[in-house]
Length: 140
Image 1 (cartoon, rainbow, N blue to C red):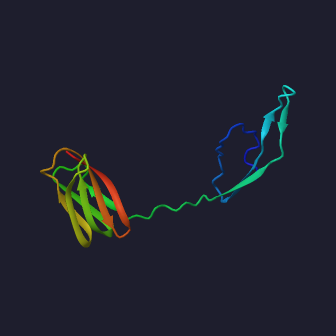
Image 2 (cartoon, rainbow, N blue to C red):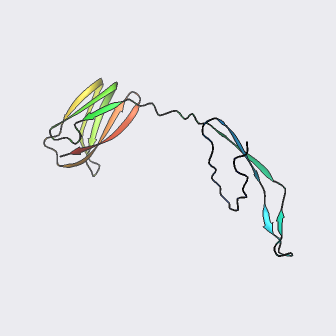
């Protein structure tokens, strides 16, 4: 398969691949020089190296738990629900200070009181059996 037959005069190259199928793209690296003895002439060496790139159009999505956080923005109580059990949660304020932390053996829902928290942006760090999930919450 020939993707691009145009001469590339650069040290780097980005090719646009047809992503409807998997395959291999091979590139022949050749040195091209201007002939200093004959102005206007170009010297081209035979290809010196072949580079083949294997590519796949099927890139799996990261498999993380589906988490629902509501209401967001929050005023009084923040609700967190998940399809998979989570084992802990931590809330950080805008400057990175932990303002709430709780661990538990595994639950699919939790409520966090936010009524007495300052207005602003908070970061939730949710620990689940599949890893750590980070989400942004806005407090009104």
